[in-house]
Length: 307
Ligand code: NAD
Image 1: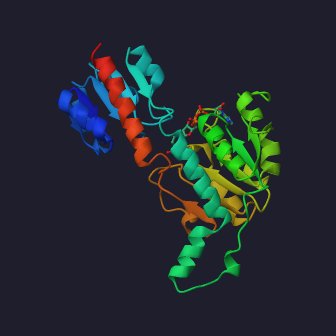
Image 2 (image 1 turned 45 degrees about the vertical axis):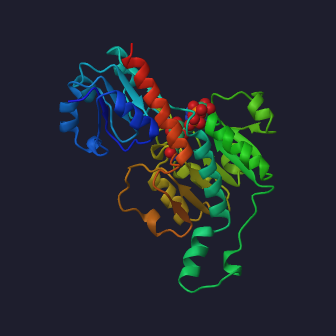
Image 3 (image 1 turned 180 degrees about the horizontal axis):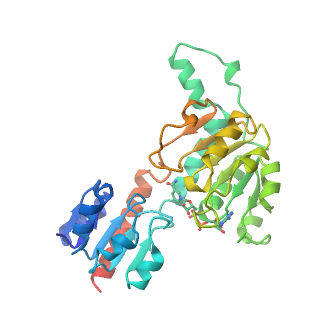
């Protein structure tokens, strides 16, 4: 039984330092065994998780000594923050540490979609040399529609501006005169306007009761047939069946998803669609972001456990 429990694959120099100073139990797969996790939580004072561990009432009730739940990453949708607060447990997370990496992956997916990079690679590997077939489009002059323009949305928009894209955003909490929108010559629009106008749509809203399955078949049907959709936020924001139907009916040109409704995902029609790029929730997985994330959670745990 340890003071600090790490239930997912969270490693780095700062974690090694923490292990030297405190009694830390590290088990990258503990999140999969809820009964064992509950037993180990009896003594734990700190719980360090990524996004797989569902820190719900049941887990929190099993942890009478818990002082802090430290979430390595952005988005607290896997933690019952209200119940933790009720129990006097500090909940910390690292919202800034991986934003840049997520924005960079979003740009990478944008280029991969518009220049058909994955299909061209596959074709070349199987002996093809089809240059005309893989004619793509430039980002320059295209309109980027951001659903959610907080940290990651803004970093994505800044990078897209450097490619010469125009920026529009739909965000119920954003003001039309927000400085970060104005600096990018961006325009606040309704979701319907965004769907109708954008050539590339990227989603950066958090998962909340309001945003769960916020984007449905009806929404994807309003996109331009030559437009692309990219999600690097949370899979549950999208009604995946609706997206599949819209893709099959060519209501949009293609999609790239780093996040899925269920993770890991079940067999899906998305796997068979050529104009779809799927990545396994890797947006935050860069060496730099992971070191920043681990450093931040270890610091939070030290602070709380040292009183
Ligand atoms: P943020 O809080 O800075 O920004 C979120 C923005 O979404 C805010 O501006 C908010 O007003 C807006 N928003 C809220 N409800 C909305 C709605 N209904 N429609 C449109 N916009 C809405 O968060 P962030 O740091 O930019 O991160 C965004 C999300 O990205 C996180 O919540 C997390 O789920 C996800 N994320 C994913 C990864 C990954 O590995 N793929 C990594 C980090 C973060």
